[in-house]
Structures are given as structure tokens and as C-alpha cells.
Length: 151
Image (cartoon, rainbow, N blue to C red):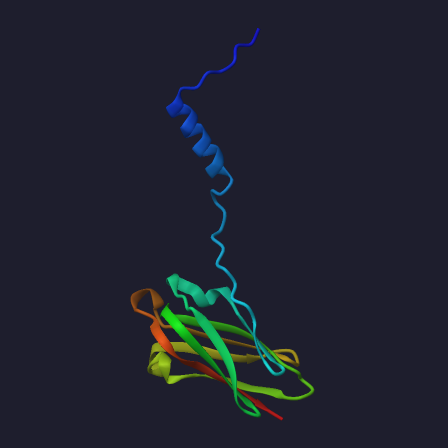
């Protein structure tokens, strides 16, 4: 006959904790994905690498400056050291020209940025501080980049 195993309270609590934690050990930490930004036929997706080293923001907005220029702005930035965007647009209406970082990032010598046109209606933009682990990111409210198109 098999006798039931009797656990003391401390051993029971330790076993329960190990059982509960075993499901989450080794799982990646999920960063909540901000919603896509849309203005007219232009749509932005903020990519997860934007949030390196704990950088965050309360709100990002996309506003139309002119027929072919849009501004990406931030509110409540905290230690933001990078910005990675997917840009989608109506390729029948416009062609991608470039995305230009704003002065809010500081001198151009302190960061690397790249604008990459892709398939029709698609482009990518990336910006990251040089040696982001050795410096503070931007904080506060302001413009981050201007997206330019041609007709």
C-alpha cells in the first residue's frame, strides 16, 4: 500500500512557488506593442527595438505638416535611446523620399540613423545612439522625425 506524501508547510510553499514559476522561467519579457499610428494614407508601426535599455514614452503621434511631410512626435519620453519604424503608405499616391531625425536627438555625431525604402508602399527607419549603454536617452516632449514623400 502506498502512503500519501505529507509535506510540511514550508516545503509545500516552496514546491508551490517552484511549480508556479517553472511556467515563466526562460520566457522572454513581452513589451506591450503601441498601436499603429495613422494619418491619411500613412501608417507607422513602432518596432520593439525602440525600447532598448528601458526607454519608454507615454504617447507617440503622427501629424501631417504638408501634402508630403509628416511629423512623428513624442510625449512623456523617458530615456529613449532609439527609434525604429515601419512606414506604410499608398504607393499610388506617393513615393518615399526619406525620414529625417529632429534636433531633439541632439548632434548628428551622437547617433546613427538610416532610411530604407522597400517595396512600393513600404519603408523603414532606424535611429540609435552610439554606445547607448553609456549615455542617457532623451526625455520629455518633442518632435522625433519628419517623414518626407514625393508625388
